[in-house]
Image (cartoon, rainbow, N blue to C red; front, side, top):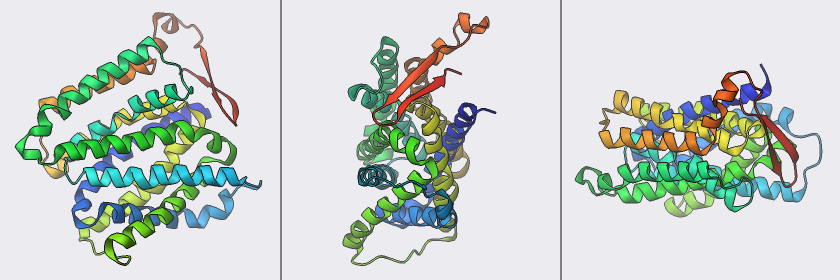
Length: 323
């Protein structure tokens, strides 16, 4: 199997794990502070990376600018993103939060276009519009529902977290290509932990020792291992070989797994608004990412797929088949 095909599998696996992470966070977020939960999660992830760190450390010398870039991306993606994610789930249920995360591909398209990484096209504009109306269906009427007090605050926090993920997806490719996904992920997580430590200290006076329930410990360990070190390694490795839009497209699997797990494990209701929202978001991603073009009649008749070329400022040219 080619690396491109493996990258597709990695992206899909990471997205399904992220859906389960939404539900796990809902289990434990009430037992601790959002920033502290992110800190514990990535401390566990770093412990997982520790045994292999000497083997994944690049043999070449890293420039100071690369250290700074990885550190900043780490603070955004592994610091601000999980804080906003964890905080939002104090106000909204898992399925609703997962639909908010489904805006990551939309925001990635916008960020990439604004910074000249991907062009704005009619299909992408149509895709963004479809997804926007999908989000409005769930974030409009249900935001004012009595059953979800503080839902608007949770929605804003989740969208902020999605923006952090979009920024990381667009701007991490150069360092991923130069230094490898595992090393970049480990170093970025370490940077986030260093940034979270003083925040947690200011909030609590001193670093609190974890005191979770049995289910809480299971959730935290899952978040740090399967939904931490493994999930983000798969995601960043996929970013190394696929375009940002193609990689984050798989995150639309996230709401599906989160809705099902939220319903099965937490008895959360599957509303018609959530289902309609998800369908519009998925339609927007399919249109905006060009998947419909990839399954055009010409391709089905056996024509060779076009080759798309992606350029990054400091990493040369990367080619990806539209398969």
